[in-house]
Length: 180
Image (cartoon, rainbow, N blue to C red):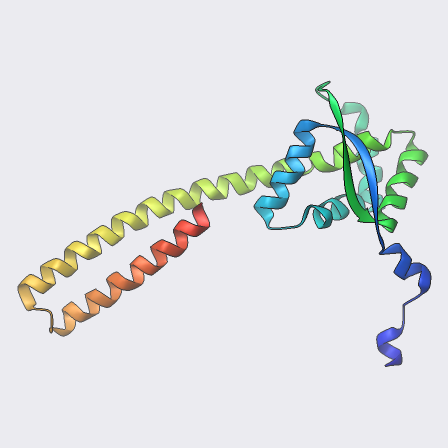
């Protein structure tokens, strides 16, 4: 029991406590975080926390901030839930680099663009594979029909093709869910 509790402290537990923080961000950035969370099957809170909790990454982003071109889009207030530690890290890096906290958050969220681009590319590839599987299922159905006509329904070859057809249709259904 002592081993399981080692490393715990009141400060450490409080650091994991959730807090709310409000940021002024472009609507495009707010939408980007929402879309990424949805695509990746994560809660926004978890994704946001992961983006802002690493002090080294925040410091690197702060160094690149002068090269970042915000689109000058109207900013709106958005409140996010994050751990107290993540908020303290964010505020520490913002103060130590002289950057606005909101800009640092915007840079963190912009890191999701390549991830979403990669996911979009995968979805397009899945859709292409889905199209190929549809053709395969049609060919399997035609082959099964031919086997039924030539050999009869009770023939072992026809039964094997019937099993293949059922299995292909099951996989087609599963792949449709992935590709949607």
